[in-house]
Amino acid sequence: MTSLIKFKAVVDTNVFISGLIFDGLPLKVIEAIQNKKVLLVTSAEIELEILLKLAKFNYGQENIVDLKQQFEKGALRVVPKSKVDICRDLKDNKFLEAALESRADFLVSGDKDLLTLKTFHKTQIITPKEFLSKFNK
Image 1 (cartoon, rainbow, N blue to C red):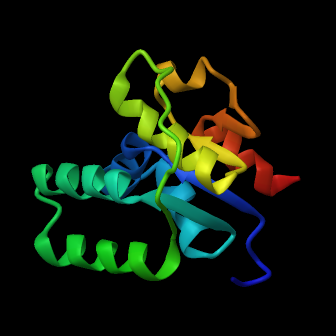
Image 2 (image 1 turned 90 degrees about the vertical axis):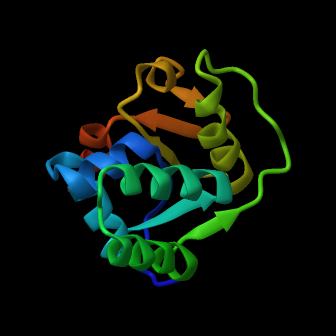
């Protein structure tokens, strides 16, 4: 790990997809990861969901392979030991499980079901805009 990294963050699928397909603030979150200001936290379940959704958007096989390699080389890949069952949408629990296992500083999301929690253990659950403001302090 490089000394540039300030935070560990789990990034939910919708932020990831929005950044890679549509840009805007979600793209700036991804750029913070690529610039090693943030250590991305993933799990096999999170990665699979991102890659499958990108395939549905016709993101391109070569781009998907590149992203998979980036996960393998640049992310903190966790295997959650604890199951969580607190989200209305059960598919969102995987993000909380990864945050818990890694002791992530942030879970970056646009999902209201996650954002209403505000925190989970020591992880702050925030929007891309709130997350990016952490770099301007």
